Image 1 (tube, rainbow, N blue to C red):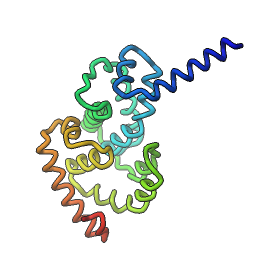
Image 2 (image 1 turned 90 degrees about the horizontal axis):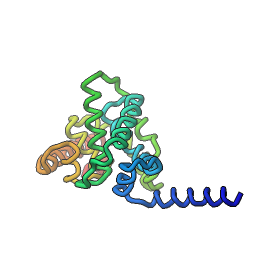
Image 3 (image 1 turned 30 degrees about the vertical axis):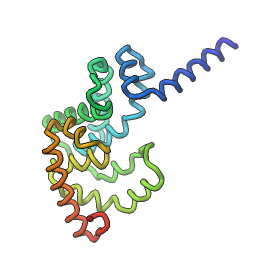
Image 4 (image 1 turned 180 degrees about the horizontal axis):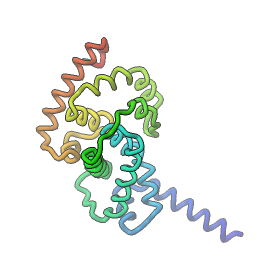
Length: 203
C-alpha cells in the first residue's frame, strides 16, 4: 500500500513539475515521446488555437478537426522546432496553414461569432470578461466588416497578443507590411466604431 501511495505521489509531483515547465522544454520532452508533456502543451494552447482557427474557417466542427491536426503535427515534428519564435507563434503558424488549406478544399457556412466569445479562456480576468461582454457585439460586427487581411492582423495582435515580428512570421510577410496593414485596419475599425457611436474605442 505504501508503494502505491509513493508511486501516486511521485506521479503527481512529476505532473506538477511539468506544468511549471516552459513551452520550449515541453517541446523537447514531446520530441522524446513524453505524452504528459504533450497533454500539458495541449491544455495550455488548445483553446486559443481553436479560437484562431474558428475565426478563419467559421465552422466549429471543422475547427475542432483542425486543432487535432495541429497538435498531431506538433507530436510528430516537435524535434524540428528550432526556437526562432515563441512556441505559441509556431502553433499559430501551423494552425493558419491548415485552416487556409482547408478553406481552399471546401466551402464553409458562416457561423455566429457569439460561439467564439462563449469559449472560456483561463487567461481572462473578471475585468476582461466584463469589458468583453459589454462591447463584444459591436466590436465583432465592426471587425467582420474589415477585409480578410485586416481582420487577420487585428485577430493576431489584439486577440492573440502577438508582436509585429510574430505576426510577420505567422503570415509570412515583412514587418513593414504588417505595420502598414495594422495602420489601415485600425483606421478603418475606428471609423466603423465611431459610426456605431462607440467613441472611446474609436480613438
